[in-house]
Image 1 (cartoon, helix red, strand yellow):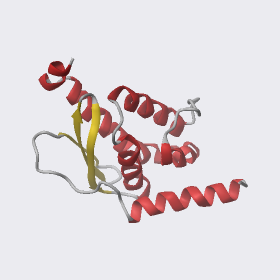
Image 2 (cartoon, one colour):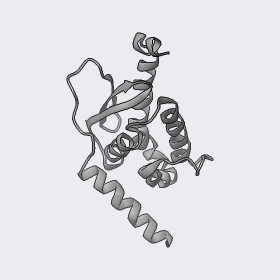
Image 3 (cartoon, rainbow, N blue to C red):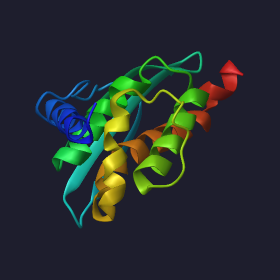
Amino acid sequence: MAYGNLETLYRQVIMDHYKNPRNKGLKGDDSFYTVHIKKPTCGDDLTIQIKVEDGRITEIYQDGVGCSISMSSASVMSETVKGMKIEDVLKIIDNYVHMVKGEPFDENLDMGDAIVYQGVSQFPQRFKCATIAWNALSKAIEKYLNSPYHKDEE
């Protein structure tokens, strides 16, 4: 596929997730690990919720306001990691961050539609937009790993 066609496809994926976000809406349930991040400099404001059972993210929800990059990335992230083991999710988060920074990353690691954000590396000012959801997910996983419930599963 020609570069222009690939760029168009990536743009379509981003706009589809922005206009039709997946896993949108929060649950009023204490069994979820919840993280809220707000970037006052740009207006991105996002909350991520995860439910973890047997070391897997069984449910994930996101809700917020922001630019097309931040909101579509939250939607893509939620679809990418749902059902995955925590250790695999952490690998994907690390790989994704390296990719959007323009650093070497494992191209063989299946990141689903998250690969469409590879072009963000050409626009450093959009890095925070592309990673806000992934940072929130990382913090939610950290909450889980530090919780007494996680200790009971070990």
